Length: 273
Image 1 (cartoon, rainbow, N blue to C red):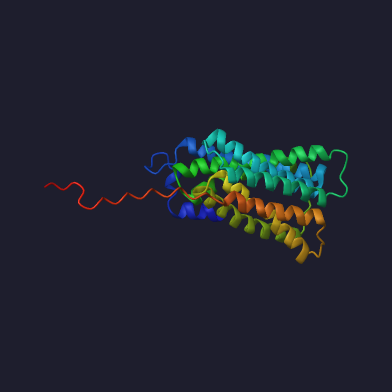
Image 2: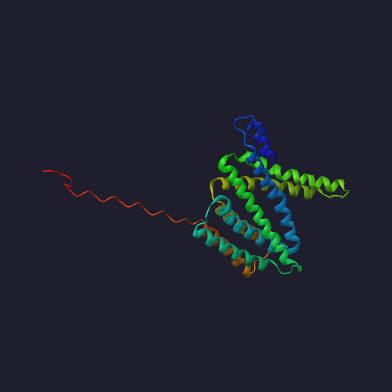
């Protein structure tokens, strides 16, 4: 957010000046702010509720599955982007892989695990909806940092209001230096990820972006093995393989049929005697 706004302000912030010829229009600004609220506020609240009730495995599977399927459905309804056969098949493989991963990573969850799954799927759908909004805005004004500045502001204002309201009610929010540094580092990494995602949404369909984005769970598994020393079970490895195959299948595009070659004219055709 800070970097995006610094770049926008340095360039004069013409997109936010109503009387400027480069004004973003109130409609696009509203959609962009709404995308931030949906993703950073609604989506994240649902995500943490899913972690509470369903555990990490169910949450990851539900969020990614909801993002892929929600992205395809929203792309059809809102953007008229129909998935190809490969994208549909890839999405099915990804969902099957995520289910296998969820089973592998869920050894003990509370009795309301199904509620966690609902929260996770809903969170994934909200993320997909925010992606649709971002693609809609960029299709009309492809200005990456303006889009990021608006969406992050849309999330920062409600979140700041929630924190201030909790402090005003007398609630104590305890933090320590290591936690703050960890969150700041995660925020920097997230900023890079958001920029890459916004750029991807400018150039690729929603279904393609969401299927590729599901590869994050593969990298999570790799990090858990090589960084944290966890061992992968058979369902986990099977799920990773299915997700990887699904991503590849979803990105394979059929080549358009070659144009027929014109038949060579017969020698002497069209000549007169």
